Length: 103
Image (cartoon, rainbow, N blue to C red; front, side, top):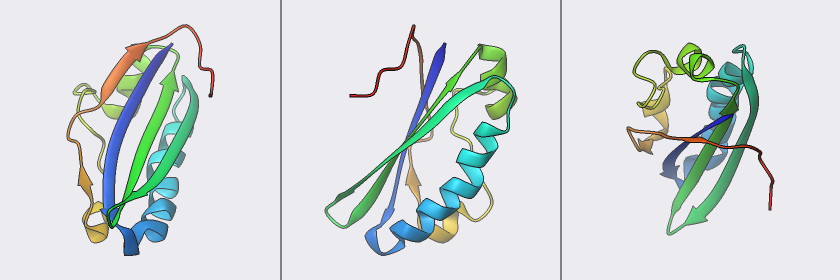
């Protein structure tokens, strides 16, 4: 199984609106791709910023590419991301794992 992780943040005042935007874009998009095995979002507030940690897990690299394209190591962007003053890592991490166990 492949775990894909991304991090981005928005000003605290835009956190709730961005959370809804992320649900309608990234979460729904990932869940709709064949080979997606799950989605998790962690949200934390730190020094006036809302940080979003987005993890998806996938059955194969082909499934990851179906979600992210051939340049799968780059973050996926959606229309209106800039409306939330999003500051995001341009690259994502991928890890091959045997299981997901929440702590």
